Amino acid sequence: MLITVETAVAESPRVTQVRGLFDLPEEKTSRLCWNVSLPLAERAWHIGLITGPSGCGKSTIARHLWPSETDYATSFVWPTDRSILDAFPEEMSIKDITALLSAVGFSSPPAWLRPFRVLSTGQQFRVTLARLLAELPQLAVLDEYTSVVDRTVARIGSAALARTVRQRQQRFVAVTCHEDVIEWLQPDWVYHAGEGRFAWRCLRRRPALALTVVRCQASAWGLFAPHHYLSHALAPSAVCFLASWEERPVAFSAWLPFVGKGPPARREHRTVTLPDYQGVGSGNALSACIASLWRGLGYRALSTTTHPAMIRARLASPLWRLQRAPSLAAGRERRLQSLKHATTRLTAGFEYVGPPMPFRLARALLGP
Image (tube, rainbow, N blue to C red; front, side, top):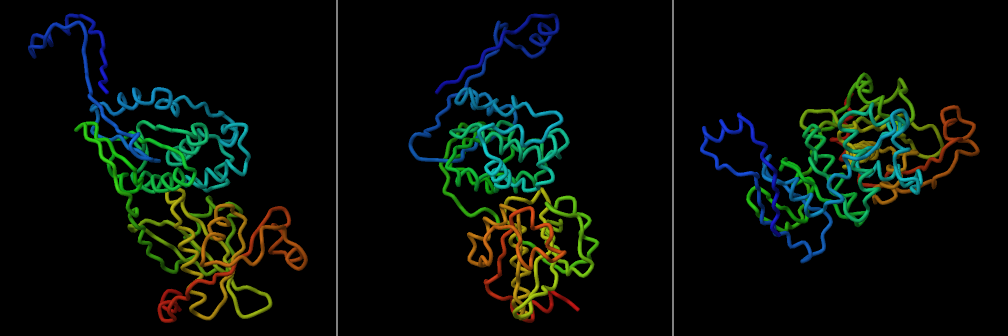
């Protein structure tokens, strides 16, 4: 496909001077041409990437290939003083909206209630991705992909997006000058616009997040509290753990003794992942790590959660066994002061049944 863009040159004294200085021809139009070959009909695909340096024609090529989709996201109207939830298509249920937000890595219910304008740049990026997938289920194209966000957000967000697009059997094309997202987005094809080079890619595992887990003071909760979906409170007796990646805090998990029948047990109290790292399973990984610690020390590890994304992840995980299907608290649970909140929302109970952490390692991680 030959793509040609012509722009009229408006004559002026300055234009004449520059022509004379640089020996430019006296043409009435400025013309740019690209000979583009994207054999996308050859294979089934879900994710594509157009990349290259600024000025190489990425956006122009995308607009010619997909004219109605390329500028779609920039035309979004977000309610000024209403929740982002109200900006999604009316036919979508709240269950579908929150599931999509969680899937792209925006898993913070308190932030769902806020207007788009007050969200952080990273949160706005995730919300825009979710709305784009909701409104363009056949093919979504996003120009300037990750250009305005921190590179950590770009990489983590790309991994969350890739998983979501493939699970939903959609198509997504990213247009960006940032090649650091390739290994995280795992596109099926890449077009290097500057070189005019197209290549199908073999999918590989995305780079691993090697989390460092340590026991921490309760004071670390202050960084994570605003992002917890239920409460900012932390029990004074909680045993706390912090997960970091590249020396940056990622997730927090706190546990308490469980008072009830049966063998000694510990129950999950608070587990939170910072917004920039949501969508790739960091919180679930930390939760399972600490659960294996308790099991390695001879305790049962129990968890009750109401977060839809965590419930879905645990139902699909061989590491957790469902003890109580999503329901309201009843009977003895209903009478317990600590479980009063569960009378107004669905919660599910799980027990960790995965492998225990080796005893010595568990003792070392727990500390004195």
